[in-house]
Length: 398
Image 1 (cartoon, rainbow, N blue to C red):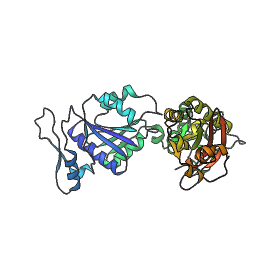
Image 2: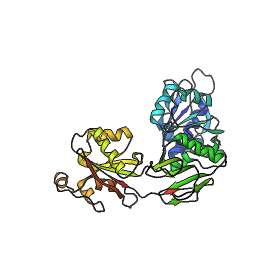
Image 3: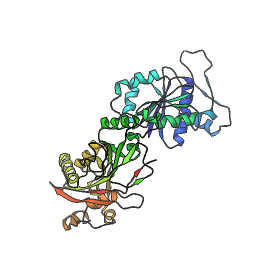
Image 4: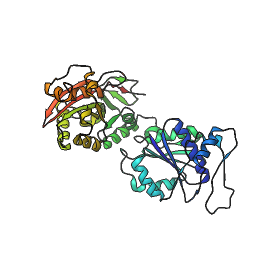
């Protein structure tokens, strides 16, 4: 998770630096900022590091406040600041402009200051709970860590809890399912790496659970853990509620009258194509390959091919539009793929391996030493070949 922190006062800067250092220790990618209108200068990076290396020294984090006659000393010892990797970067633009950039490049934004500043700053950029970053507000005294935006899908609730634990604050979480200890379908989907088919229907599921109504649950996969209270496991032949959740690769199979599909992103598409094939052709063939075996395109997690295609423009554009990783393998690596594949003498003569798409799909979906399973063999059309493989995966309940 990439986190951006912004502070607005001397005390806030000290707390922001502490949060930054503590989160970095937990292997988050964190960057700290300060609004220069309020805080003019922070210590040099080397000075910060020197002080951290000597935590026993009662050195203090010194800041100078613009047009202030107060003693420019933040009464927080370096011991309180945690392991600060870098000092905060000054913000010369407006907070709104800064926030707009962070909405584009960060997974989470932490405002160390007043809620009003955060609300006014994020207002022009809020679009959808599917895409908005997590927003957390921490008061400058570190008394409260407030989940303000994108609590579930963005992870603001969990981040607020984590920051509260780090600084000894009280977490403030207001989402109804959390307050009432009910199953949250959007949190479940995020943790299991599933796409939600319909956010409106997801709200109906939450509303039904909060009202004490039973919601159906079906899956094509093995489940680990105990089914949450309020959900009832259903199979196709059984009588079931009208509203239900279905974890499946096939979002056309209707298990309930009102079916919320959760599609796990566990498919690797292996591709091969003629040089110069346009993106539209690549897109069309992959879509048809998915349709052939009733797999939702939403299940595609990545695309794979031979390294000869690493600069193939049409494939790169397809992946870029969908924010999909594009993996490439050498001919030697592809030959190591386990399984029986559709061999082609022509392909072997050109590439050095008898099959590209199927082998690449299997390699791409292999995890933790377990080989991926080929579920869609080579589909060829318009100079493009595509194959689908699925990684080993199961539904996990906490």
